[in-house]
Image 1 (spheres, rainbow, N blue to C red):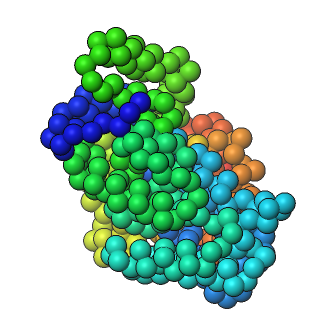
Image 2: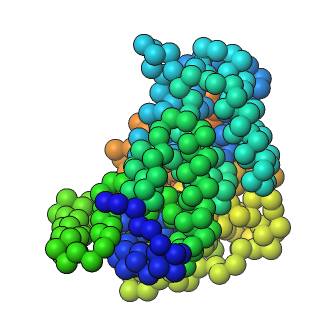
Length: 431
């Protein structure tokens, strides 16, 4: 496929039907990842994870291995993002034969990597981000290339586009460029082109560069087939046939159905907790981005608080509180219990959101905190909780609530229970 050339207006006209179909395709990154409700909830937790990496490097506590490190924790959370970040952890895995990336056994390189993350976190403009990238590139750290941009995206989503092979392939296909992998100068050149692409096609994309990166990813992955150049009817017909084949792919349909079922299960658990909390005598808050979800002939937020109590709104953690899946509150507005439902999403992110909530409340440590997850994920919950990076979480007395226990006992608890005691009995301690 040759590059699509012409004036910005002409190019926009050629690509408009492609963008429209991309928006409509339920399996595209636009629908399946960029508008995935869990995506934005992970930004805060991933940024906190990067801050933990910086702190450990600065204090000399990071160590010399990737496995079990704070970097593995945060990169694993990124890799759990749908589609576009699958495999993002590969660039940071230690390759002993090549001894790359050379930030584990080389203290000076490790500190340079830490400074890079810290400077990008502290700055708030393009110039600061570019200075940090150039400083890191000048260190010539073996094996540490622009894949690190995937970390920066979660700190500066309007300045730093994600990076992987499919995105580069898509960019080259669309523009006719010849960007190569593994070099920061090549990435920065592509970044300039991506910013211009995003400017020209803004009505189809977003200020968040995840949208344009997702578009390029879908081109590079073969999901989007671009229209041919010229006026060849046969080529045009072939393009239409390829597009129809990609969109009708049976395996993709199956995957979309499975993901829809996961989202439905997440909502169902929130609904159980909503109804149980009200039966036990609490006011209930449902995550602000979930309230409109259909549930039980109505909406998930029916009968729940529409605004947080004033005391909670004034706390430093108000933004985090609004996104907690379910919160039970006393009549006086005091937080009684918080629940994060992790059906298939990152356990790490759920723990960090609980920690954010508790630290933001000040006296919130007295409340109860629960991770609600399928029984099959108990080992994962315990493994994440045991990480040294989460040593502070032990103060929360965070507990694990399996789906099976909630399903088996919720009716009896709602009928005969009062207060937090019933839910505490069936939850499992993680200490």
